[in-house]
Each structure stands twice: as structure tokens, then as C-alpha cells.
Image 1: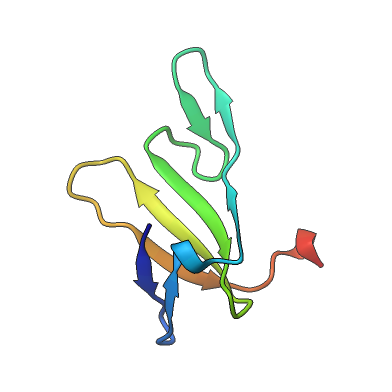
Image 2: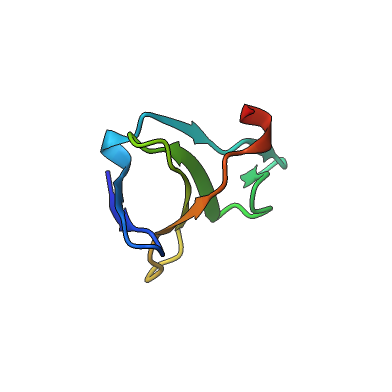
Length: 79
């Protein structure tokens, strides 16, 4: 899918991720609204890299926007 450079330098590849979790969404009667962003056009997907790093990919359906990834600490619900 995509490769991203994290802030501290390493590259991560979503195709090589060990695991991924899509955001949850709710139907508001017209659209699916992301619970993570509260928006129908902005999305977040959690990944665990092959080396065990957790990172969020922020994506948007807005024209001209660019997806990006940020490393996060291990999610507390995974401990």
C-alpha cells in the first residue's frame, strides 16, 4: 500500500506490517463517521511494523491532501 518515513528516521511499509487495525465508525444516517477523528473524510489506521513499532497512518479523502504516519507508544489496551 504505502511507505512512510517516521520522524526519527526509519521507513515503515504498510504491506510488510505484522498487523493492522482499522478505525471504528458509526453510521449517522447519511455517512460513516470515524470514531478516531469524528469526521467522515479523515481516517486513522493503526499498524504494528515487522520490528514491533506501532504507528498511525493518517489519511484523508480530501483532494490534494497527503497521507502521513506517526509512531506511537504501545497502545495501553495491548499490554
